[in-house]
Amino acid sequence: MIDTGNILETINMVKLYNLDIRTVTLALSLRDCIAEDTDVVCEKIYNKIQKYAKNLVEYAEELADEYSIPIINKRIAVTPVAFLGESCKNPDYVKIAKTLDKAAKDVGVNFIGGFSALVEKGCTKGDRLLIESIPEALASTDYLCSSVNLASSKSGINMDAVLKMSEIIKQSAELTKDKDGIGAAKLVVFCNAPGDNPFMAGAFCGMGEPECALNVGVSGPGVVRAAVDALDKNADMSELANKIKEIAFKITTTGELVGRKLAQKLDIPFGVIDLSLAPTPAVGDSVAGIFQAMGLEHAGAHGTTAALAMLNDAVKKGGIMASSHVGGLSGAFIPVSEDAGMIEAASKGFLTFDKLEAMTSVCSVGLDMIAIPGKTPVETIAGIIADEMAIGMINKKTTAVRIVPAFGKDVGDRVSYGGLLGEAPIMPVNELSSADFVKRGGRIPAPIHSLNN
Picture 1 (cartoon, rainbow, N blue to C red):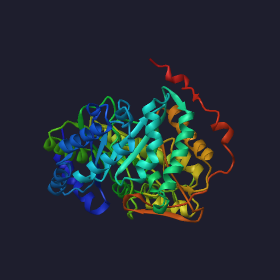
Picture 2: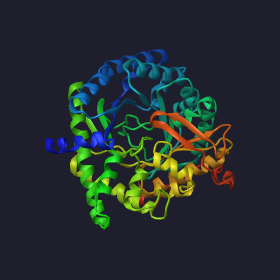
Picture 3: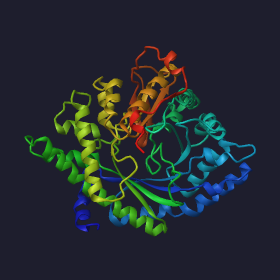
Picture 4: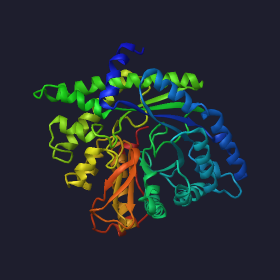
């Protein structure tokens, strides 16, 4: 039962500490859009998105006004597109990408995700064609986001796909180098990708999802920081964790109320509430700022991983008490370019690549929105991805890599995207070669705990 008293109490968080509903994401199955002709597939896709999403933005804005809670992004996530082109005699995935982009623009959403493939055990013909088309698709569209699942705790790590996606990431960055490689910023690779994630660039409508559902992503790192700041400085770790759980409970309750109301207006099922502390470049809306409120001098200090582990766990515990439909990623994000505190820490050298990797073992996602020198070899990027996939596979958690090779730039330079994508310093990477290892190919076997049927 939703307690409206908690909702009213939470309203102050909106004005003072940047609490918002980061995204409402319409998850839409396009499996019935399959046909032998690409033009027919495109027509079916466009018409279905128009049918289900035509009122999404209008209704979301009405509810934002009614409850005085900002809804920052309105998004659509569709069935992994690799499935849609496989039945075509002459599949044209770039044409499908442009159709998705046009449909997103015409209904007024901010992003559309699902230009995706699931290749943790191997690739079909459709998977290969989609992957090859990703650089052109992202360079020729504005709102489209792409993701590829390369590994899972059940299947292991597809190293052939890891190396291939490293090439695709570099190509995507190169084709959009005039925009600081934004193509790569709209592309993410996963281990254990969830099919109900409302956050971009990784959102897609999983194969076990209903015809249509509304998934909501709520954020509020500024609210959490304010709550931690208000605690007695002598409060111990248990008191600190309990305060974070309390705030997470209230944030989740708020998000579910608005999400259920919007789903009702759209006449579709409510899916999940994803309680993720997704930061922004705005001052005070930083996960790194929470670490400082906890007592660390800055993000990157020894103790940062422990602080993040406690934060992530407390957020999940508070969210699961507030709702029976918590899903997606849920926890704390650590994107470098999208968090003012992380940007500062990386710029000053407090936060290194290796420290970020260690932090991904306990955060919600992984290495997110990190800019690296454009000259970084494909094999080094593959090694970075393989390491992150291994963390996810062994720990039975979602991990991801969204990395931007900045062509023409090196350590000391910056990339800048504006808006929620923010800006980031170019971070140095280990220059030791990974080439012979990643070129072995094949599949790193799943760990022994995968045999748990």
